[in-house]
Length: 188
Ligand SMILES: [Zn+2]
Image (cartoon, rainbow, N blue to C red):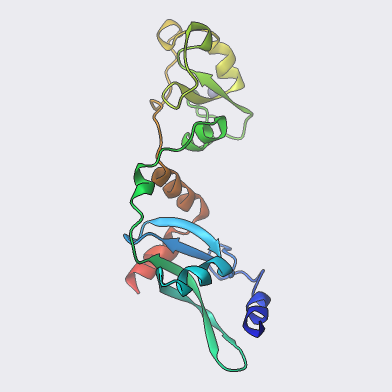
């Protein structure tokens, strides 16, 4: 209990890098690709089960009554999670926007109200799938209306595709700005 109490004191303190909270621990797959960010409780659990090794510790040391604890900042799984690479992201409007980087695929606008455009319009039998949906600002969506791309000469900047979980995790890593920390851990 004592240890847990002390560890809790660390919560809310930022490390020097990128504002990642100290109680957050980066979990890498066995091949060093980014998997997730978990709470220190979850991290301790993974470590206790022998499922991961510590790649990098925090500089700060926590002293408890009987021992010194170094909190991990990066863990690496012993066993590669392979299924994740092949797992398809479930279809949702939100996930279409994540795939497209929250950007209109027609005009490139960001920071505008975004909608989902069906390449083959629903009125013409187009389905709500990753392959037929792109992120679009309201203006572009309105302009395209119920037309096929070829009819109105509006094509998305990138053809839509079914993303995998692993692609989503890579995006997440970029957005969190944790690439530096991971590269550093791989060197050290
Ligand atoms: Zn647009």
